[in-house]
Length: 200
Ligand SMILES: Cc1cc2nc3c(=O)[nH]c(=O)nc-3n(C[C@H](O)[C@H](O)[C@H](O)COP(=O)(O)O)c2cc1C
Image (tube, rainbow, N blue to C red; front, side, top):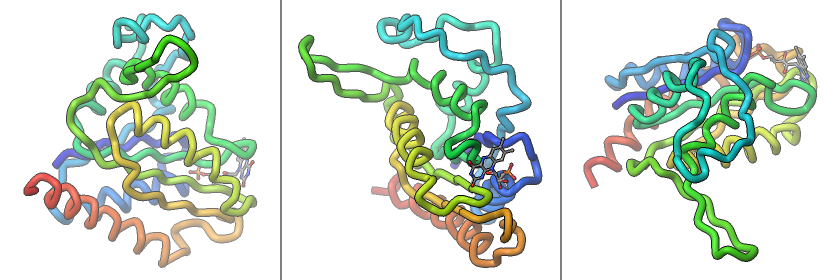
């Protein structure tokens, strides 16, 4: 089983990254192969809104690092998305990445006022969202969940689990045994869920 994780924080040892890494450690303990992409290390140009991909299902922008990230998505059985909260929402770099997942989306419309969104990726994946905040409570994660839901839909991932960690200003994730334990067991259970699905 292959898992690709995408971290939308500039901190490789910050709250988001630590939770994501703990999920991957749990998954590795069950034999999964994992790769982590720190989105701030990559050149991710903003979506041009040209809608070229709505017809062609590929992005017009080919001179940045997104093709590499797209390949990792295609080749993975599970995706972990992680983002902190900036100004009550996901970070800008994370949004930039999600917007560029639009080429995976297949739109079906009746030509009037109805649109449905599917994925061009045939194999079903499993998806986990990790979101952390500093001082705001869990209600701040509504938008993180909504955006991750759209992204998972477009890359054909079931929104399998979310780990939401508010109030890290006072309780960094490393001091929360419960959060780290939840992250590790989520990684373990992710592999179990994949194996169960595959053997069906
Ligand atoms: C520019 C900026 C904006 C932030 N805005 C919020 C916010 O609106 N609400 C909140 O609860 N925390 C906010 N935070 C705090 C971060 O979400 C928090 O420190 C988080 O743990 C950082 O995650 P990281 O360690 O993975 O980078 C903000 C931090 C920064 C740098």
